[in-house]
Amino acid sequence: MEEPSDIAPSAPVASQAETSARANTRPAYLQPLALVAALALVVFAWQWYDSRQQISALQHELAQRLAVADAENKQSRGVAEQVREATREAQVKLGVLEAKVQESQNQQIALEALYQELSRSRDESLLADVEQTLLVASQQMQLAGNVKSALIALQTADARLARLDRPQLASLRKVIARDVERLKLAPYVDLIGISARIDDLMTWVDLLPLAMEARAPDAPVVKGAVDPQESAWIRFTRELWRDMRDLVRIEKMDRPDLPLLTPAQTYFLRENLKLRLLGARLALLAHDEKSFRTDLKAAREWLVRYYDGRDKAVVNAIVAVRQLHDSQINIEVPDLALSLDAVRNHRLLRERAR
Image (cartoon, rainbow, N blue to C red; front, side, top):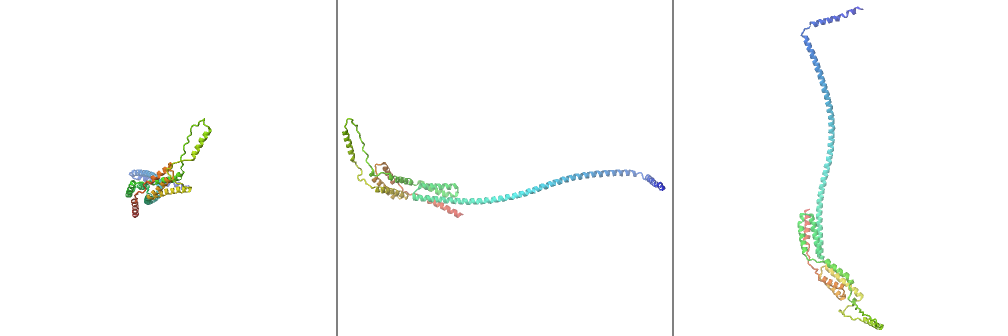
């Protein structure tokens, strides 16, 4: 059993010896090569290690940059999403603004059309008002001879046309201006003033005293100095004589044919005088000079015959009636045919143009 243990170690010893012998038998030039190879191996190992470190650093740096790039990419995607959202909102707002602009343009077009229509309606309405004003003024002037009111109507119509400031109305305004100058040169009759004076006379008819109601002024009573020594009988006789003398009055009358009227006749006299004055007023408005003078002449004759000529109010009434009788009321007034024709022709031209 112990022999195998003694024999076994001998084999390795022989191998080592053989190896040493073989090593000693290698050539000498192989040792530097082995050294160079070892150095190359070390250098290669070092380069490999250095390259691995550099690659690891590059990978780390690349990973960091990739992470940063990924973060920036995510941020860019967020910003891009925000931009897209903002773009969509801007597009929506732009669409709303475009719709509002279109609506505003439509409203502007509608307003312009409405303004044009209102302008035409305003012009036509103004021309219709001017024509109506001139027509009424012409009728008043022909019926009542009121030149002043017709002149005011023409000036008002010209002022309204001037406010429009339309070049197309220049010819119409020229015609109206010519009629204004004609009315300024026309004679003027104050129909309103004459009518007012006749009305005043009518109100005073009931207050004027009649001739038969007039009384002579009382004679002044002369009282002499009373003598204290005069007896009572003498004073009584003097006063009795004075009273008896006052019972009889002798008066000189300028109008021996003084008419005496009953109360009924007095009432009808005053009413007929009013009717005469009223007839004169109607004749004034109708420009009937003959009837006007006839009624005033009859009224003046009645005032002179039946009323008290010594009364101041009666004298004033007679003077007023005489002045009215001498007034000129029948004058030739111009017409407004030229202005009316110009307005109507202008309206017809506008209607044909439409």
